[in-house]
Every structure is written in C-alpha cells, then in structure tokens.
Image 1 (cartoon, rainbow, N blue to C red):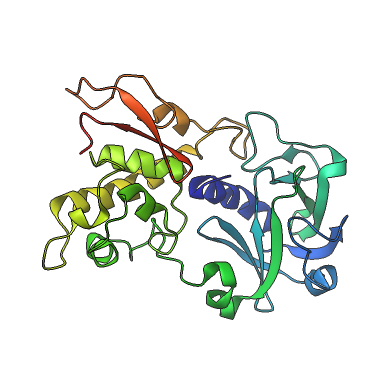
Image 2: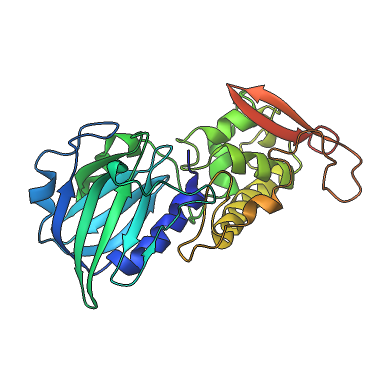
Length: 296
C-alpha cells in the first residue's frame, strides 16, 4: 500500500497535466473498483475544470470548479498514466513496471488543456483502489476523513499536540503513531524510520514521553522533529521506491536506499558509535525494525 510520500509524489506528477484542464469526457470502462463508482460519475464530471490537486493523508483529491472533489485511493496496484500527444508517463508508478495493459485501464480522464489534449488513465489490476465524489466544502464529513489527525507535514503537528494525545497511554509507541486519529497518513515504513532517528523503541509505552504535568519530554520533541524530517526527506526523494515507485520523469525514487532500519534485519545499526544490530519484531501484524541497543 503506498504511503504518504508516494501519494504526494503522484499528486505532484499529475498536477502539471491536470490542473486547469477541462474534463471533456470521463470514460468508465467498468462501474466498480473496490467499491462501486459514484452514481452519475461521468455526467457529473463532464465539462468541469480541474481547479487543483490536493492530498489528505493517503488520498488524492481532484478539486473541480463546482465545489465537488474526486477522491481517489490507489489501493495496492493502482496507478495513473498521463498520455499526451508526444509521450506517455506514469506519475508515481514503478520500478517493477506498473501495468499498461488496456484491460486494466478502468477510468480515463479525457482532458482539454491550453496545449491541446491529454488523457489521464487510472489503471488497477487488483482493483483495490477506489474513487468517490464529494462536496469540497464538506470534506471533513467524508467518512474516512472524520477524526483524522493532523498531517505530518503541517504546522498542527508539534510536541505539545502529541503530548496531549499520548499522555496516559500504555499502548506501544509504534501502534500509537500508526493510529490515523493521532497522525494522518503516517505508515509503517516511516514510523520505523522516525523512531530510529529519535532513538526510541517501538515497544516503549506512549505515555512515557509525557511529563506528569502533561507536557512533552525531550524525547517527544526529538520524535516530532524526526517524523517531520523523515516524511520531508522521502517526499524530496520522490517516494520510497519500496516495490515499484518512479517519479514522473521515469527515474527511480531513491529514498529506499537511505532506509536506516526498515527491512534491514540482521544488519549493523547505522547510528554512529552504536554496535547494535537491526532486529525485526511483529506488532499488531506488522513488521517493526529497530535497534535494541540505541532505541530505548
């Protein structure tokens, strides 16, 4: 499943082709993906101008000029392909090549642009992705968004906020950070990396980072900085490349080569001066990678 940096890279790759364009026609080659496509989806989108492309957590937001937003989730195998007069590119798609088999092209945006035309194709062999249509002014009421925490890239995420959310909790720190009501869009890979940067064990009790008076301890300040930094670094690198990620120009994202603990079981810890080894444990069905020597 793509994490936040991958979805942000897709957004940035699609924006030049889609923002400001008119949807001449929305071609639906089937009526459902993971869920049924919106009722009257094609008619409701035809003739609308795409105002902007946004993102909330791991969801792509295509804002139209009539206060409607197309909400898209890539699922496990979804990708967008941009086809213009001279080229075809796959924003956010993939070192192991994403499918271009036409039988998996399910939703096609036929666009009129200032330069002529383009076509943006949503391809999804497993059909775990989905699209919904929702009023932009009521996005906070979209069920998956209700109760979501702040973005790890936004100004609302700080140590004081995390102290309020983690105070008194005995839940392991890794699980608390994966709770989307605490931080939106923060996934397994980058939680492992942030905890390593902050030298905190994924097994540590969440509330241990909060003072008796409810304020953040120094370790929580470091963790907040680590979360923001690891997400920023991954976005700048063009996503994780974990399985199959490339940037819009076709070059591989390279952040996976900077992973310090994720998927490095048995390898030496990269913390300077640490002689520890990266271990793998399973927490709530997910792999956690950490160094027991320097992450306490």
